[in-house]
Length: 255
Image 1 (cartoon, rainbow, N blue to C red):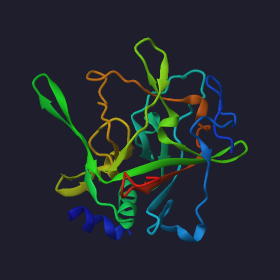
Image 2: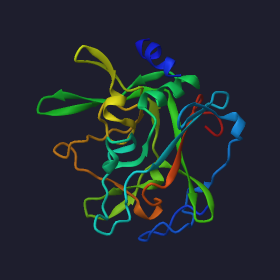
Image 3: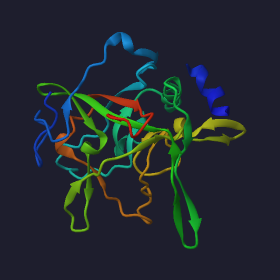
């Protein structure tokens, strides 16, 4: 209840072939972007638009890292989307809106937050406590060489194998976890704003939107394996729209 009280007032070619740069060809799974009529989306904060009836939040973003720099071909990821001046070096995209504004936008489309995942110490290690919250679908919309494109988050990610090769990222499921509040120096702070973790990939425990599958951010506990799929990602600072869609009934057609 505290979260609601605090937050509510805040109120096409798509990719290149494997091994090459982003060239505007469409990979498997990507599809032409379906434009939402402008009048159906209302900007509730700078860079955050809401269509309450359709259950959609759109967030303006930009590609966070230069994955095409030949000096650094392997870009390890820990975040899908972060806020400015936080985790850009390990994120797919960066947004200018606050994490709490994204949270408020999700409340406006009728979603209820749960809780981020966390790691519970047990013996000499940790055990995962899975995130909770209502499910959401996330799509990335961007301009390809021949027009607008749309892709699932996992299409921009590859998984490094033990032999050093990489494979496709499995389909991902996300929930509205809602980050956390914590008292810092006598005042209550929204940790999504403090740490910038808007859409997680590994589990820091402060994500606004969290993947159901958990990965530990410490290399001492879990070897980093999630990497940028360079050949399908546009150049650094290219505009991207992160589209978050409400999923009410997972068994319903098209959900």
